Image (cartoon, rainbow, N blue to C red):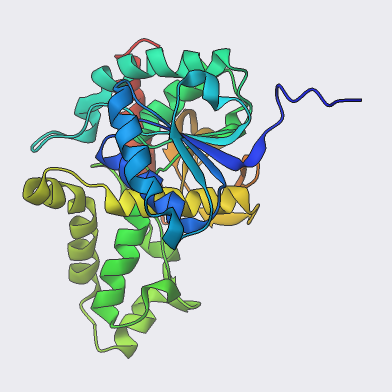
Length: 321
């Protein structure tokens, strides 16, 4: 008997909605990863999607075989992952939260179109403000909450590891630390749980000749938080770092890695926070978010996390879904 594949996902197929700088960079990074054999690009400007698909396709002879083409919402069917980068971009002197009204409006047109196609894969939100838009996508998509996640603070965490690696003159991949909370101005560096290959961060710092911990952590935390503003001021937008972050999340999903990543997902009482998507470490596998991972936080960090959640909830309350 022929199998009805209306809701069967092709694990090797990905769709990217939005072909601006971020979407195009994500497509390029994903193409190079070899994770997928089919990639659909969707944009309100079909010519833009076609141009990006053609341009990236010309690099396929140097990578793994993959079919890349511009499509429409009907081409979403049987994708294992839909990546949504579409939205207004952040401008100089504009916070991610300033984008809320514009991008919630855009999501009200995009997410229902995905829902109409009976999509039942993993919905990965990248557009900003990512935590609020992930919450919006949960409400608008009708998908199980675990299958809707945002890129969250995966990039911020990478920036933290990069800065710490430079500070300590050690491979950043050996550093285990997270940025949590909002992907934005109220984000928190979780210093309490930070370590270098199991060695507490402060102890490792002293091994490397650094003793002024408070000054160093405050400086590095501010540099990480302001990274996007610095890049936007200098080159108008950020896209390479987030593209690599999206590729990493896709790897965890497609390979069912059960990796721990600080993606944005719905909170249900963790640290006393509910009803909002927040960027916290979770186990990521083939069905999206498996479970939150409790990490050691100080009372001050928990207080700041609750403040971050309140900031997002207050903004969300001002924008009807």
